[in-house]
Length: 96
Image 1 (spheres, one colour):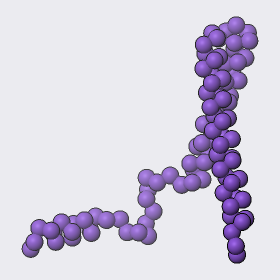
Image 2: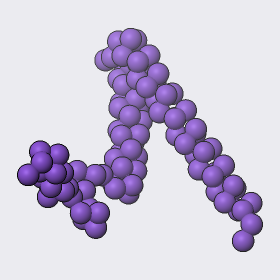
Image 3: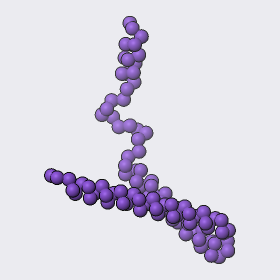
Image 4: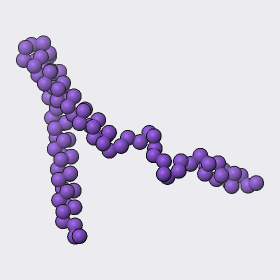
């Protein structure tokens, strides 16, 4: 038997059928849920650090870092929202 055909047969046997789901693949819903949870956690952490800074329990550097993280998270959310709205408008413009 030729080594190439043996390798091809082994690869074919180990290949996952196209009808089976990839167990390591995270679905869109789970990915969005995780993203929203991270966004919420960032906002809550920033709020906690802000409150601690107002009472003198947090240093200014921690406050600046928390605010920068919050700003980045909000900017990212706005960019994603704009892309979603743009995609929706493009779908509406498609001829039926």
